[in-house]
Image (cartoon, rainbow, N blue to C red; front, side, top):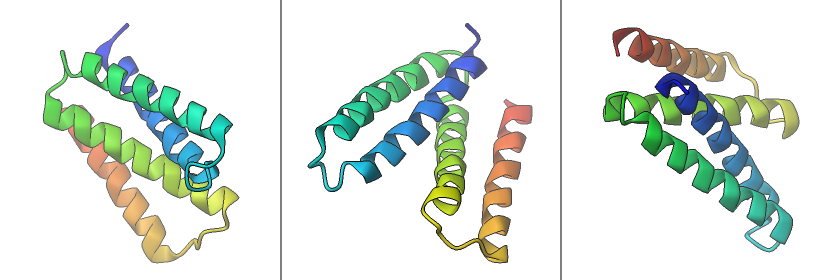
Length: 105
């Protein structure tokens, strides 16, 4: 599997574990905690495999950027977090940064 595909899956799992953490309610609910831990291990493990072929700075920045954008969008869609012009601008800035890192890697 290509390094960028591994990084994409790692990033998706990062979104899963961060959202699952919210549902643990302070680490008191076991099922979301288990989902969080499995997704976290998978995310970091796949990131480690991806950065064998992708520069580590690029891989880490893309991984965190996709995670941040995904969690922000989920928060807006599911948790009714505010959708402001400034917030959209911030998300778009991260997306542009991710694209620039991908193109220059």
